Picture 1 (cartoon, rainbow, N blue to C red):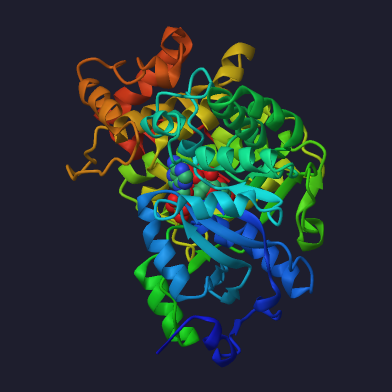
Picture 2 (cartoon, rainbow, N blue to C red; picture 1 turned 120 degrees about the horizontal axis):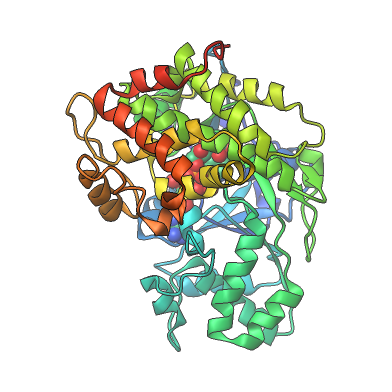
Length: 495
Ligand SMILES: NC(=O)c1ccc[n+]([C@@H]2O[C@H](COP(=O)([O-])OP(=O)(O)OC[C@H]3O[C@@H](n4cnc5c(N)ncnc54)[C@H](O)[C@@H]3O)[C@@H](O)[C@H]2O)c1
Ligand SMILES: O=P(O)(O)OC[C@@H](O)[C@@H](O)[C@H](O)[C@H](O)CO
């Protein structure tokens, strides 16, 4: 069977669509850090759509990987001329395959940092975009300030060091642009972080200030950092995905991407050095993204946390299994209606009730096969950012917190690392050591987990929160996850 690459494009069956533009004409205008599943299902797809309309051919993407593990993506990109298949899985079981051609180059920073820096220093690059996960920004969870103690950051800040981190590489490229009298570029974060552009601005300038205060001032004056809300559920690619693509489309793709059909990108129109005609590809350009991002982070992402630990402990392994269970759906709607929604402002053009029900349908799409393991990972980056703001607002306003407290307790129970059948849970978290150690003590010291001020700030001092949290944790320990959810769901809440 042939490999997916430029030569194979003309020989693919009609069931898969291919770029209708000449990829030889496409030049890179964007450098993107973090070419994982999501970037390839989202930004790269929007650009491919524009390129198919005959537009944006000077806005190709040069991908960059900074982690040693990105070596695998580098090998695949080199073998496949940066092409990959994007497979959209519909809730009725049908699917569409499309080869995406908008990524035109891929650089692996650990092997050649100089190439990455010089690429970004070149005038051709006008946007540097990011999906480097919450961890890539190096901020302290409680203070929100730049964490300069991270060993890679310490390395990058040393005089004369060759940078390893995204911000180290970007800062060096900006220093060269400034020294050469060139224009700045836009830094566009596409990560699930509230105020993602503002956070990128704050962290990049904090890093630059430690390196060169003059450069930091130049960055503040010359760069823009648009905020955005990005949405498309993109699970981890599996071997089954690879083999079904080979069966159906007759090509070997070493790293395809699968995703749901839903797509949304709401973006602030704040670009200092031009941008592709995103609006002509379905992107909503707005002046203020905040209402959209709060809606998405508190209803979609926090609901993922609401369903993943309880669902896993109850024996489920996929998001759709949890969302096809009426009891869990009632629990999710309780969280969304009674706790998340009161913290949101009206969102222009969006009916929130409809949005919530659409979320349940999206989560319930059995063909997407999003694993609970993906949603349970890196909880210490997610719970403090998505769920705890909801808790704090409701505590201050006398609002409901019962379900949110139970979700935090379900994380604490999950972090014990053993499920209800005695099987080991592989806890994936950059703070794994401390969270699992705290969880291991909670059978005798029920507030051991909540005591982390690094994660929970002063929540342990709030009597109302502690009462609800302790009750849920006690139920989880005595009757298990399903019965705890049963005890928590409001009568009549099931849809
Ligand atoms: N998967 C989704 O459904 C989805 C949807 C919306 C937004 N997102 C956002 O995209 C991000 C990436 O998700 P994904 O599904 O592509 O994950 P992924 O695991 O497929 O890819 C993660 C990418 O981030 C890079 N990365 C991780 N840590 C980094 C660091 N410290 N510095 C630099 N690069 C780093 C990796 O090298 C990799 O390229 C998420 O964290 C989220 O903010 C994901
Ligand atoms: O990717 P993360 O770690 O930011 O969050 C996990 C999921 O909630 C997230 O990936 C969603 O699937 C996504 O945000 C949907 O658009």
